[in-house]
Image 1 (cartoon, rainbow, N blue to C red):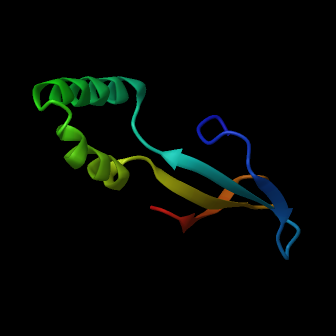
Image 2 (cartoon, rainbow, N blue to C red; image 1 turned 90 degrees about the vertical axis):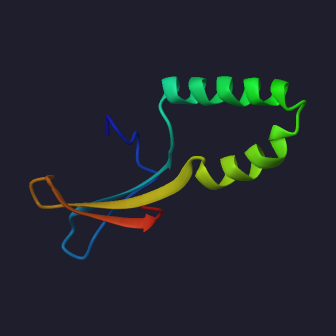
Image 3 (cartoon, rainbow, N blue to C red; image 1 turned 45 degrees about the vertical axis):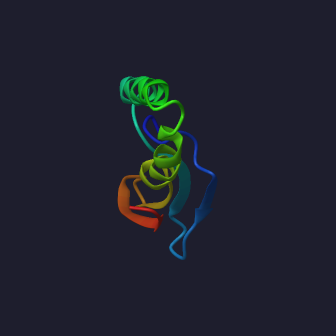
Amino acid sequence: LAELGKPVTTESDAQNNKVDIFQFKQGFNTSTKTARALVHGVADVFTLGLWEVVATPAEAFFGAKSMAIKVSYDENNKVKDVAYLRGK
C-alpha cells in the first residue's frame, strides 16, 4: 500500500481471501523528469522548436506506462500472488 497507494477495488476470491486491484502510471522519478524537461527545453531553443517534431512521438512511446495489477492474499493476509493485468 505504501508503494501503490489505495487499491481501485477490493474483492474476495472463491476461498473468501482478499484480492486487490491497483492501477497506476509507471514512469520516471522527479529528478529524471526535471532533467528530461531541461534537455527538451534546451533542444527546443537550439532547433527553433523543430525538436518537438521528434520529441512528441518519442515521449508518447517512452513516457509513463499505464499499469494494472491484481494482488491476491492468503488467509493470513500475506501476499500470495501478483498478476499483471495491463503493462509490465
